[in-house]
Image 1 (cartoon, helix red, strand yellow):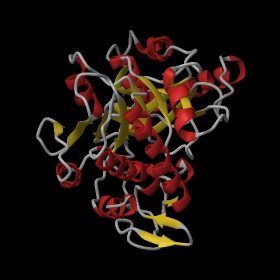
Image 2: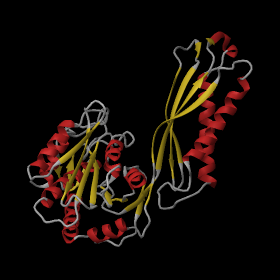
Image 3: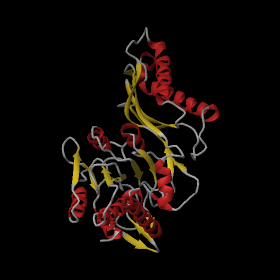
Image 4: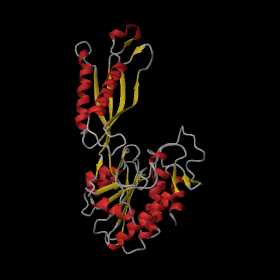
Amino acid sequence: MQTLDILDRLIAFPSISRTSNRDLISYIAQLLADVGITCELVENEDGTRANLFATIGPQDRPGVMLSGHTDVVPVEGQEWSSDPFRLRESEGRYYGRGTADMKGFVASAICAARLASQRNLKTPLHLAFSYDEEIGCVGVRRLIDALEGRTVKPALCIVGEPTGLQIATGHKGKTALRATCTGHASHSALAPEGVNALHLGADFLARLRARQDDIAAHGARDDAYSVPYTTFHAGLMQGGRALNIVPDHCTLDFEIRNIAADDPAVIVEGLTEDAARIAAPYANSHPQVAIDIEQTNAYPGLETPQDDAIVAFLRDVTGTNDPTIKVAFGTEGGLFHNRLGIATAVCGPGHMAQGHKPDEFIDASQLDACDAMLAHVLERLEAGL
C-alpha cells in the first residue's frame, strides 16, 4: 500500500475537531496491525476521540518520533470545487480537506512505519497521532501524560506540519484568554444610571490595541518570523440582550502569540492591571463592576537551538543545508519539548498557505519528497542513528 492510497482513505474520514476520530484511528491501527505493529490508544474522557502511539523496532531505547494530528478544520461556509472529503487529483496536485494540514504527512508516516516493520531497526521509530490539535493542542496532552512517567521516551521528534519540507526550529507560544465584563443593567432611557458592559469591553479592547501598538513599535523582535513580534488578537465579543437594556454582561475572547523573549504571564499581569483601572471609577457607585480575565487554553512556543541533534538529523535526511525557519502557526512541538524533553523540530510536506481554506491541496512532488525523507529516516534507524 502506497502513501497516496492511505491518504485517499484518510481524507474520506471527516475528522473535524471536536468530533470523533475513532473510525480514522481504527483504520490506522488496522493498517499497522496488518504488518504486526501494536498500537496504544490514549482516549479522551468519553472515549469518542483517541491519540495513537506506536513503536516499531526495539522497545528498550529512545528513537525518532513522527508526530501528526488527525483532526481538520471545518468546511462549512467555504466554496469548494469538489467534495472536500474525497481526494481529487488535478495537474499534479491532490485536493481535499487535510491534504496539506496534515494528513499528507500522516499518510507518509504510516507508509514508512509499515516499511519499517520489515526492517531490522537498531533505533526505534515512534508514531504519535493526536486529536483536537486545531483547537489548541488539546488531545496530545493526554498522550504526553501517558508518556511522561516512562523510563524510555523518544529522543527526537519530527512534527510534520506543512513547511514545504524546510526545517523549522521555532514557533510562537499561544495563550487564549477571556475577559468577562460585569456592568450594571438599566433601562436604556436611563442609560447613565447603568454601567454598560459593552463599553467596558470596548475600553479593554482599546487597551489591548494600545499594548499591541507599543510592542510592535518598541518590543522585542525575532526577525525569523514573518511577524517578528508578539501579537494580540481579539476574535470574539458578545454581550447585550435588547437595544433598550443597558447590558450588564460582555465577554471578549482574545489571544496572545508570544515570541520567546516575551513572557505571556507578564503580559497578562499588565492586562489585568488595565482591567482594574477601567473598573476603578465605579468602585463606590457600582461595586460589582469588574473585568475578570481567565485563561482558557495555552501551549508553549518552540525554540530549538541551531546546533540541536534534531536539526543535524533533519539536515541529513532531507539533504539540505538551507537556513532554518520559524513558522507563524503553533504546533504540539513545544509541549513535546517542554514536558518530555524531546528535541523537536517541524518539517513536513505542503504549505500552510493552502491549509484552512477552500480547495486545500498538496503538490504531488511534496508528498514524494516526504516519502523520500522518511526513507532516509529508516536508513538512519537501521544503522542505529
